[in-house]
Length: 262
Image 1 (cartoon, rainbow, N blue to C red):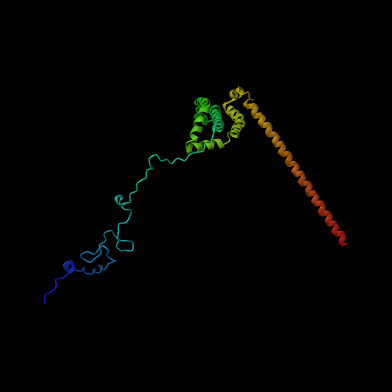
Image 2: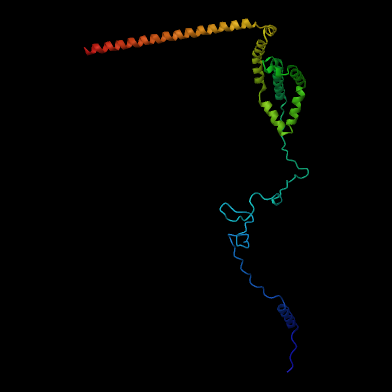
């Protein structure tokens, strides 16, 4: 009986089966991992002793890694991120005019520097370290340029945070009271400096001589001592009167008790 020719699709199946049989063999099962020797993580030497590649810990166990910081080449590398072109991190400052306050502060600085230049060199011991003439000349230039200096700082305060902080500090300082204090203390500072210079400096300031000032102070001390003496005498008198009053009250109370008992 003649055999019918196989279907063409069956031939393709036969070719696929033959190609599968000719492929690689089935992979073997993975071998179990080697047993870990916790006492010798880096292995053992020929004598069976644990290899201490990085030394030992305090408890005697083998150190698994090197101690300390990692070498510079092994450390994580960081790169500073640069702002994009055209970007800016400057915060816009609200406009504020510090001109008037800065002029007042500049006047205070000028007056303080001028007083230091005038009186400073007359101070004993410390005066020789104060360059009076140079400081006075500097204050003269400062006073002339004060409006421009105030305007410059005011302009900078509109654009720079540090300049704004300085301008605000000078403006909030209320320079007027400081200026008043300087005016009030200036006569004493000048007179004290003249005293240490002598009678000639006192005469130039139309002040009494050293002897006269000393006599005035002695007279003031005598008046103070007399006042203290009077106060002490008055206190003693008041204490004596209080003691007499208490004694009289005790006597009356005692007499009253005796009469009541009779």
